[in-house]
Amino acid sequence: MLRISVLRMSRYTGPRLRRVRQLGVPLAGLTRKSAQRHPYPPGQGARTRRFRISEYKKRLTEKQRVRYNYGVHERQLRVLMAQAKNSREPTGLVLLRLLEQRLDNIVFRLGFAPTIPAARQLVSHGHVLVDQKYVDIASYRVHPGQNISIRDKSKQLDCIQASLEQPSLRMPPFLSLDTTSLEGCMEFLPTRDDIPIQVDEQLIVEYYAQRL
Image (cartoon, rainbow, N blue to C red; front, side, top):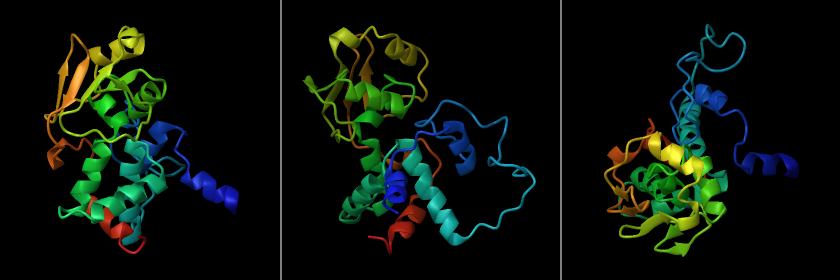
């Protein structure tokens, strides 16, 4: 039982496109691949099978979309949810904002990496600076006014240059980037319009209502 619980808490490392198909929406933070060729869940007979979706399943699916897009553990998401509940602002909005403020996501949204897992690797390997200081914690929370840059020795890495040439998403308004120095800045807190995935955050709030 202990082994099963540990596996459930771990970060997903399986086929990413399969997860996108299962959750039914593009997850740019997880993968650049599109499910347009197979716009239905994986599995034999999934194309013609008719599913009866329960209210619990709807809430779980919305929660999983967020968890897999941002690449967070279940425990991490629970902690962020608890923090969001203590805010005076709408809980769902604050939760999405906290996820957007993660350093690995900011590195991704600035275009330094093609996906959040790739951005997390850049952070953990010491390629990223926050206010000119090394930060190798992917979950570090970036605040307005802070600068995020690539260290000088890493600016010519092929993976970074390729991602900058073909970013996965457009630059959100809450971020700015100097493409010459590869230095970005969070100008203000993310808004609901800055969330890049299709998700109903209220269903996530309802999912955790009796679990926290």
